[in-house]
Image (cartoon, rainbow, N blue to C red; front, side, top):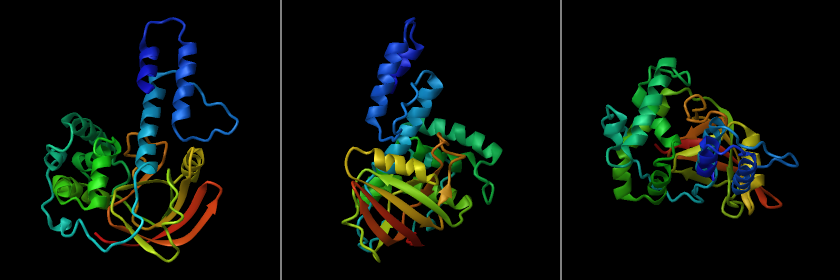
Length: 280
């Protein structure tokens, strides 16, 4: 739909308003948003198209990724911090994703390096920033998280050097206790039990804006979950991500979370989790 909107906006047709209105309405019916009775503003410029594209990518990372529902004691990334640190992002991910995605991530990473985006605890390189940006570009996130969840040894080997760089980059950003939120397009109320500790092995996208996650959860057509997380080691990447408006933070693989409460209201499950440790 966004590609069609781009073609209409950039095309030579004089009377575009009807097509823009139709395609904008179609786009907003496809994503979980909650405008209430207020009609969403039509997408009329390429800047708005790019913004909605980045927003959609964030929703995919946050809300449509599978999450663990039990802790089986495995540690798929054991020993990762003892591996040599890759010198460049390209070196870390060679053969695992399109080179164009790496190039654009490093280019934006260079700008982040110059302005010290995210207020790093130590100097960070363009390639460290680029490792975070590559994840938020959605070029690799789905397969990366799948191999981590499934402990796919061949897949983990493919991404291990990238993960080494990503974990090092995340460690360079300040971490402090903060409450985050995550809207998920699935009901976890029957799988998550109070007192249980679960390890999330994927790279987990969350938001510090409760309304963003709440709108997502309540905007899903089926059952969903609104997760409230009391975190200790999340890194705020809102100043680094390709799209800052969703106030995105990341939890790194191996984050251990204790279930504090579970409540079901209508089609939305409300679950509160507390970070209690890291397995990596």
